[in-house]
Image (cartoon, rainbow, N blue to C red; front, side, top):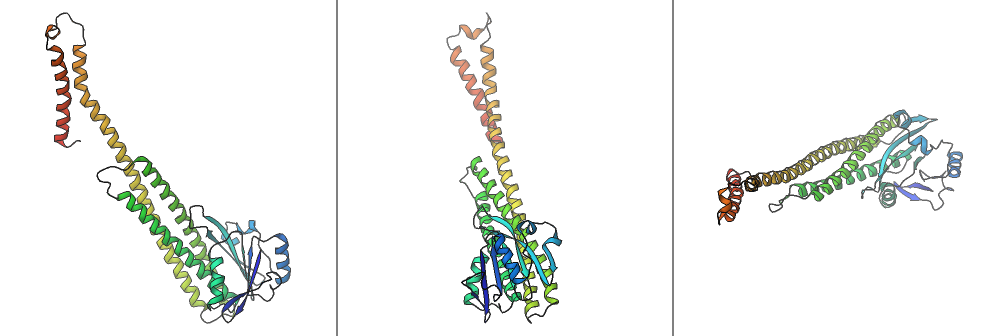
Length: 323
């Protein structure tokens, strides 16, 4: 699918015919393009459109480079990040002297919300560079929203771990669910940090590209602000990662406490029933001369001794604070 937008007094104006208006557009957005669409766009704009395999290259040199006067910049962006089944895929920004071309195979939310907002509000979209910077600002805002929501979820997990349970210990099932929730937030935060790293490198490369071109006066300041925002989000993502690690350690500590409490109960039960077992073993021996065997009160006497031998250790443990 191809979407194209023209510049109109700092705003974006979408074309109804995505492919037919490419030459007049300032921004061309390719969503899962077919080989025919790629070939038509390459023929119309005389620019090389990267394939999905080329976009997924890990090397930095493959993500940021210039070719025939066009700058190619690839960043890893999230999609469906409001849930746990989020997606992380590369998005390539191709900046030519007259066009911005974006190539993607998933749909980050910024690519839905930015065109709608840019139609209503002037966001400095007079040139391809202006559209790119405004789009990157929308992407960074979206990453900030994701981290903010993740922070709220992590705070909720923290409250659930350290809440007062009216003297009752947490159940193993609850703690297991907590560990799973912490793991999901850890994955999300880690992936957002990776995305921010690619965004920071992209912003640095964009600074070099704009310095070599004729640009608007406010372009360097906007890119500098973008870089500062990305670095601040990286710091916040690092803080969240540390908090996730702390919560994971705390949850594992809670599990150890619960297991120790269970082992403690069995240990105390074994000690409590040890004296009655000893007494029962003595009176279970078959000797001809045992005075209590002929005593009418021998059986109640033995039961009483066994009961007393169980109660006394229990009271002693309670007195020492071991229970």
